[in-house]
Length: 277
Image 1 (tube, rainbow, N blue to C red):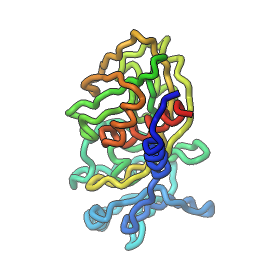
Image 2: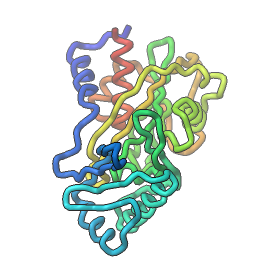
Image 3: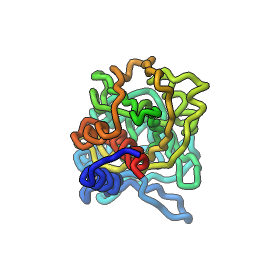
């Protein structure tokens, strides 16, 4: 058990209660229309992006996509066809400067039943506010310490911020389990025989507007992994500049000092509170 002050516990709990924010009222909803099956909001568009997108679609319409004064509507089609249309839309937004950090890597949009409707460049998910998925792994030791990575200064998102032992987006063809094991090796040098011991502990839904970038909506699949006291993480993919091993109390203080990425702050706060029970 980790002893934290009452005020620290309250601050972490309040932060977690506000992990999923609503989209601002002036953001345009993006609807997925399924004909007789109805429709649902699957994204939100920053109002700063709307004039450019309106002009783009007037010049050259894109199949399965329509825009009115109040909404952007996406009609369900075959996943390959819908993906193609959304890629055309994303390419236009990229040319306009609205999708920075293009990765040439696909995410998938998956409904509540696990059905995949389309794949799209991962950097475009925030531009359109589509829900993505990621894995985060808390690496801890028997000494009540936790390992944290510091993101490379060259990262397009949150450079230099503290992150979990390993974390990353779940690509279009991955499961959370496969993604977690891959990220552990790439980011922290955790071999397969150790990574196999990850323990799934839940999900955290993260939603927040990002000024100038769009709307971040992501399901975080959370795992815990106990590491040997003599294990030292080693980065392999250049996305982490280094690691620190600190107490849970210090981790809590750094969360409240805004030293973490938003996602990792929620995941680490959840871990700390679970250890404090």
